[in-house]
Amino acid sequence: MTILQNILFSTGNGISDILCCRTSGTVICNNYSAHMDRASAITTDTYFNFFDSSTWNRYTGCSQINLNIRIKGKALISIYDETNSCLQTFDVHSADTYNGVTIKPDTGCAQGLYLKIEAADICDIERAFFYAANDSVAANDIELGIIICTYKRDEYIKHNLRQLYESEFFNTSSPLYGRMKICVVDNASELPLYDDNNICIIHNVNNGGAGGFTKGIEYFRTIPGITNVVFMDDDVEFVNETFYRMYSLLSLLKPEYTDDVIQGRMFRLDNRIIQYTAGEIWNYGDIRHVGFDKDMSDRSCLKDMNTSYGEYAGWWLACYPVNFIKKNLPIPFFLHCDDVEYGIRCARRLIILNGINVWHETYEYRVTPTIIYYDIRNTLFVNHMHNMFDANLAIQSWKDRISYFHVQKEYKTEYMAIRAMNDFLKGEQWLMSVKPERLHRKLCRVRRLFRLHNTVFWRIVQLKYALKYNIREKHNDDTGAGNSTC
View 1 (cartoon, rainbow, N blue to C red):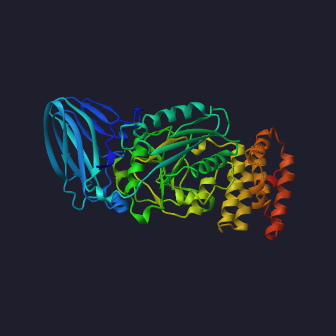
View 2 (view 1 turned 90 degrees about the horizontal axis):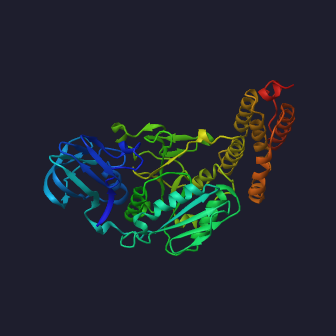
């Protein structure tokens, strides 16, 4: 039996439980189980539990889907399709013991399925899941390698490792046991070193996220049997069901999709029912978020939620085939745009599936002058490396940004923006040879800056740029930084 999708009754944090079930009456949910009082009801037309049969069929060929539910009590179970048409009903009468009920819905042309459970008396649900009726489609022998890069976030790491350790991947009686290996790369070299058959913690110099994930890739290149490598941020929150679904999907992928990348959605930490993005489109650096700021508790969002496609996979949660990572290492960007460049270089289709996601702090909470440096510098390099660079547009965009920072009197940020362009002009050979940790320390040591310093610096950099790209400067086209200080 190949389980495709467990019914998740609760995420465990309460706030986002509306993404799991819609309830009426008295219902107590606990991850994969639920208790229902008389006259209560549960429906699963939700982000986590809507079964997108069209997406599963597209990527895996699974067309015969069954539902198994272990339940005791008296209830009516109904299966609906995406149009709210009832496909099948089943009466349950099992007062004292759990009864394993298998429902084989006639899905026909249904694009999706959900269930409704109506309790005629007190009911307890031990577990429910959709599974593939024909196991012959399970052709891929999958082993996941998880890379988590961290820097001075010990509590996040301990919590997330504990949660993964409680999953079926580390349950010796589970068929998933041994199918996940975890490598934590500690760029602060503070966590105790550790290595067993399934989890290792290794130390690394602080070369940023790109350097940390590179170290993890090098580790998994030495581990036989790994088929797919997952990049995951250290400060995310997740449910273990995410990795069960990822594993099941990979296990069943048709041959034409096995080299593709699975992208995990990002939900907001400050509003857990809001999807920040389902995928990313680079757009020359003006990033577009697919499905931006969608309230995924809204039933209307379920339609076509897995049909949008991004251009690259963000490393809050991204799963690459080992064949790609064996031949490709990230560019040493330190942080920001490393996932962009890696994804554009990979140039494979992105697969998204509901339930494969994390909750993560969004960009607006992370902006600092140093971040601005990496954003501007690395955007320029990505566009230049992948033939998306327009010298005239790039200089104008840069001048607009430093003008904005100048007007806002954000002189340190203005300096970082100028320095970003200055370092970009040093070229890709400089980027590949510079010591990321040493450079980052220098950037972090920058303290108070004055307007005059930036005024001189930006003019020097602008002249370098004009000479390199043969751009004639227009005397009447000055930036705000120049105009306001001359």
